[in-house]
Image (tube, rainbow, N blue to C red; front, side, top):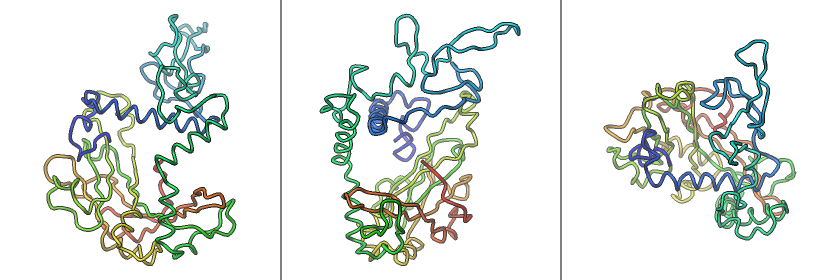
Length: 344
């Protein structure tokens, strides 16, 4: 969303993104998704670590964990003294009038009225202390709104068992009978490759000659946006992360099926088609498109991941297998044979 619409609009510019009314809708949705995840994973929350570079409120190498905010001992400016102070990870947000800050642990129970709001997904929760009931309700609501299982069932029906031999047994599914390969294009790129925000557009078939038409092309199947600060020198965190590599993914299976491009999802069908038709373009939102070779560390690779339906009808996911040969000979396609980059 940030940086979308071809890298144009307020939401594509870090300096003014917060002035776009949709900015608040976007972040409300992010909060909702985190709340859903927290409800499904009550035993997981903040991973303890240290913040090497600190922040406006954290000293360098400060510890960060669920209870960050409690008093700890720190050396003072006097070598022979110790002072007690707090490490307020969620500062400057006070939870009491006497100056106590919120901690991550305080916020683990998702939207149970703590801040006076909730989401429709939780309307039928009777008791937040009944973890199993909350998980069952939230899972049911998610499946109704995002019918992932239905999608996999459709893919299995289309594939008609062609890719089943390439879906090995996994824990809990010793002899798969309902499984299919799910195809994905993976995009990795240096975040500050162009010094401004940009979008990588992925097509099956030719891309329009005019980048203004990318978003409206019938051949467009997805995109990935780099949300970039154009003046990183004014942001310590941006400077620290100046060379970071970012990544994302674009699903291919739905487009392959909807277009009738292949007879099934077996690599013998999919790989030759993708080698002929997979295309990508890079655009900053103004001027001509940028040639992929001019985008530092841009790389496109393709994988196929087994998806299974177990005896209970639940979706299980196997390990991805990379098909480097799809993009290896293309501009900024696969350059190596290493394992799949984790872009989660």
